Structure formats: C-alpha cells, structure tokens
Length: 340
Image (cartoon, rainbow, N blue to C red; front, side, top):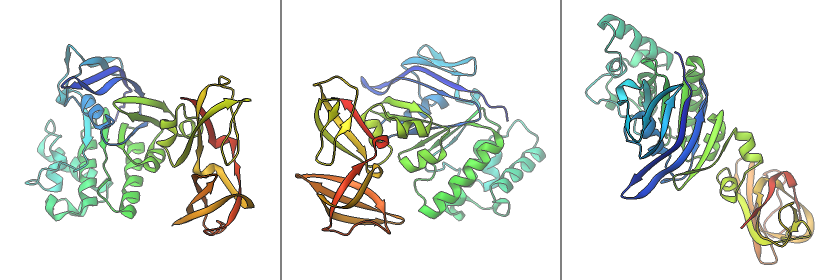
C-alpha cells in the first residue's frame, strides 16, 4: 500500500450559514495516524466526510500528496479518492457475507482473485473462519474487524475511522484498538482517527488535533499537546484540570493551593490551569480532602481550601482518606497561566 500525506488548507463547511468546520488547516503525514479529538458537534466527523468526498467544501482545499482533491469550485468524486472509511456503526451490507463485504471494493479484480484477497484480509484480522457469516451473525467486535478489512482491502491512500470502537465494552475496545493499530502500521496507511475519548486519542495518535466549535484549537504530537497546551480548552481536552481566575501580580497568579509562575503581562486578568495529576498531597493544614472515588490504580480526590475545590489524581495506595487535612504541592510542569 502506498500512503500519501493529506493536507487541508483553510477548509470550511457551512450548514444554513453556521460553520460546522471553519478554516481548518491540518497535515496528516504519510503512514501515520492523525487523531481528531473533540466533543460531539466539534466538526470531527464533518471533516472526515469532507476528506472522503461525502460533503462539498465551502472554502479552502484538500490535497492528497501534490494532487488537488477538492476545493470550493469542485471535487473529485469519492470513488476516485481511494479512501477507506470505517464508520461508527460499521455500515456493513446486511445481505452480504463477511467475505462478500470485503470483496465489495475489489471489483477491478477477477472473481477468483477477489475471493482470495478477501479471505486473506479476513485472516489478517482473525476472522477467516467467519467468512461465510452475515453481519447479524457477527458480534460487534467481529463486525468492526470486517469493516476494517473492507476498508483496507482496496489498498486505499488513506483510511478514515469515525469513532470505530465507541459501542464496544472496554476490554474488547482495547483489544480491537491494538489490532487496528497493528494493521495500520503493517500496511503503512495514512489514517485519520476520530474520537471523543482523550485517553484513546493519546494512545492511537502519532499526531493529534483538538477541535472545538468547528475549529482546531491546537495540533501537535500527543506529548507536546499534553505538556504544553496553548489554551485552557486545549488543556482540559486531554484530562481533568482545575481552572481558577485571577490576576497576574509579581509574575504569579495566586490560588488557595499555591501560586503559579508566569511571564505573561503583569496586572492582566488570567486563568490558572493545573492538571489534576500535577498535584501532590501530604499531611498538613492547607486543605481538606472532601471526596474520593476509586479509578483502579489511582483515585480521584476533591480537596477544598478557602472555599475553592480542586480535583486531584493520586495513587490509590497512598491517597489520604476523606476528611484528612493536607498540604498541597503543585508541579509547575503541569500548571499553566493563560490570559483571559
């Protein structure tokens, strides 16, 4: 499979004058996974439909490699884009077997070659023995595997995955996510992966774009996005944060839990943003633990000081009990100040 990069330049799409996607510029490198993270209505799925050719552009352009695929004046039809799509509901043809579903996009091959290729792809996703089963006879995880095999069998230039695991239980979701990433790496396909789950986005992405209101808030590699967000919204998209308004005074923003340093404009109104995992608690008097919820290896705590309540992620083995008096230390690597 020969992967191409995908470049979106100032791409826009409007519905009744309202922007579903507004001037989005992104680059998906060849053979890598670009994850699009955002809440429902942020424009993620619309962006995928624009790339697939299922929606027209109202502005900007899309290129596969050096080839112009779409702009506001026209677009190549979907069948010429060589894009494989895995939808949230899998979109398998109910009247076709698993093998026939995979064969559907191989119409340029002879019948015998189509059957051989389809079975090879089903074997690759662990479903060779289910080749003759119809979608209603397959579990949700099996249907997802068939959809992935169908998307990749035609050797697309890009694979678009729209919330492909959202309906699955956590264990199966993790298993199929790992399998899918393995197949994508093996085939070196350029992939765009839409999700509203921050943990999933961080796990699958080589590059990650955070979307809100049809715009890209920030795009970079996952580690950069987590460690160096450029806004409170971007920080909050990747995990629990605490946000408190204040003023910059003496190159700091004061909070009941400790001051946060900044080199931003003195005297300006600001937001102090602290990740819940950037806080360490120890016995003391500054704050009090008001709540505690187990999350496996970690607990999510709420601590209160001067009427302000912050969330803290702490080791389940060492986290203080509800009612404990604690001191609070803020790791500056997980604390940020943004102008309001």
